[in-house]
Image 1: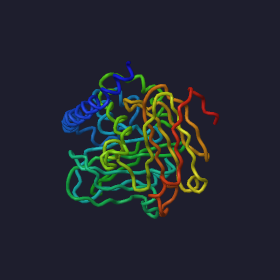
Image 2 (image 1 turned 120 degrees about the horizontal axis):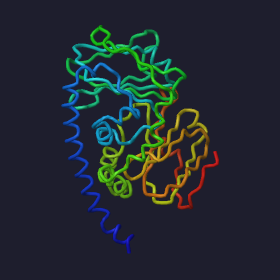
Image 3 (image 1 turned 180 degrees about the vertical axis):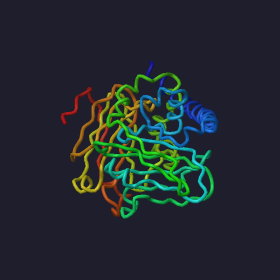
Length: 318
């Protein structure tokens, strides 16, 4: 009886969740913009996603509306807004020595529209400082480090030739907070993201552009995404051809229905079986190129087999 009632209410509740998310995203974004305007002294300081950050006022709601598909595999730093007249520069040597690969995305402010990006593949290894030319305006920066080194630093930044951001050292285990983040779950976050499972469930009859816009994070040109819903007590069986593993790094994160990460894994074998999840949720696999210039990357989805199976909860044997 309860299951039938849930099925009847699924779509109306998903529609209400969708509206609630849009309203909250605008409201929280407005408050965060005001906060940044009145805290200019912090604009030139790296803010690292960490336990310390999410404990501060407004940070968790901001992240749950601006970037709710938590990237559990990367160390993430944000910066700005910075006033730029002509260009900014990143100390590429610091970034290269801190991670196996990285991407820096530049957004305008306060609109947060993606302007450009720089990756470890695109950066010029012949120069210490990598220049990015921009139109006059205010910008924010998001930097993601993958495959972290033993010593990790977020890099120095110059604006119009003047260094205004100093490098900072980052604890290698700074992402350990993800292990307890599910404890933050409450009605607010559940209501925000309730609709995501529904649109993934009905993905085949919805416009793919709409589903991607609602679910996927802002991606890098060297990243492909594989994703889908997970029913209660189901698990995934993922098969990656050997040639795909040679070309890509595969990062899996499984989320509950409130979009909080349940578990994550870097897939390095041709077959990987996840744990069962005891609740409805969804998964996201970030496929990142190991080197630039890989051809036919958009056919990657046809080369990977992802099967959702109903089963009793099991432990992965890897």
